[in-house]
Length: 182
Image (cartoon, rainbow, N blue to C red; front, side, top):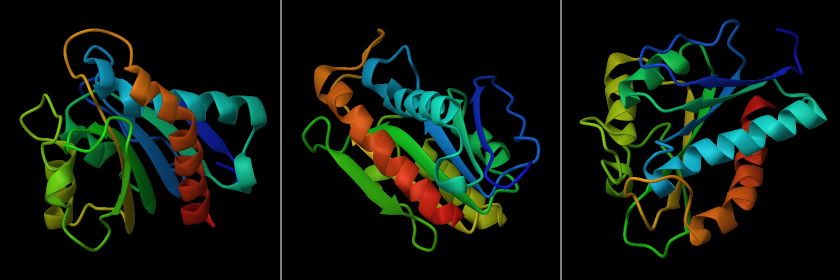
């Protein structure tokens, strides 16, 4: 991969494979498109992927953008070989729907608001991060963006509150990724 390349891809299989020729930074939108606001991370990744494909490599950085709907433990393979990862997921902490949370978990444990907050899996994103830390498989930098969801019931489509924040969240995530790639 040439410096300045940005890869936009989907990783929706249950058994993910790491990105070939892993760039320095991987952005992973996590979620379940069939559980309403749980699809917020996927929507952000789609926005970033569309922007990357239309505009080329922003800021000349080597960044991969992935969508992931599998088990959170599969994240360990998706970020394997990356220096930094930015995760985007829906959370449920009690804040107002659409609220954006940013947490750098590179050196500190994942806070309670990100542990098992909205996961429909036995192991959530927060638990996968802590397992990776224990196994020595956590990238050097890990930043998590969580968007407060309103509805996690079965069904498609984000609620209005979450939809309204997707563009600004996508912009914040891309700025973060570019900063990590610099």
